[in-house]
Amino acid sequence: MRLIFMGPPGAGKGTQAGRITAEYNYLHLSTGDILRAHRKKGTELGQQAQSYMAAGELVPDDLILKMVAAEFERPEIENGFILDGFPRTVAQADALDEVLKETGKTLDFVLVMDVPDEELVARLTARRTCRTCGRSYHLTFNPPKTPGVCDVDGGELYQRDDDKETTVRNRLAVYMRQTQPLIEHYTKQGLVRHIDGVGSVDEVFSRIRKVLESHSHTD
Image (cartoon, rainbow, N blue to C red; front, side, top):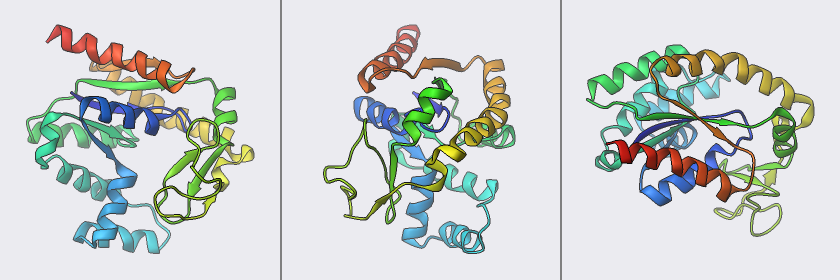
């Protein structure tokens, strides 16, 4: 199964992607994780990305796409993958379509998590991030074992500026503006499945599982 996972900030994509990969043994391709791995290993792509980030610039689409394309060459990918955090624009989606075509792959679904704005505001203000590795936690849904400390590397957890209420609504408006055309792009291809993202982690995962299993029954 080859999936793209989309949803507004705070919709719980990372948590659900983790559940899906654990249950179905898919490769979780989070662009944030891929970028960090390349920088840590000092690959050529990682060094190029670092030069943009050091200058305070966004890593360009084509560089991110090269990193994603490199993941498609991993043998584990054959079991299925879930792309999380990419594409973010129609231009990126078009480029991804080309890469998939070149590697002989097709997408099965684009899962879109739907959560009302008020719920997202409440969730986002409870999010904490590790200063060292960038791992995300949630004080309600996914708290660290020790308050204020990352489970992985003991780094300090902090509230990012863009997780503060003053900026959250703006982020949600930007998401809708940028992502609506992307949802339309994939709707035209018949790939979009909307997932109600309100409820417990188990309830939301159960809805996702129904979509995935409906596909396996039609194969």
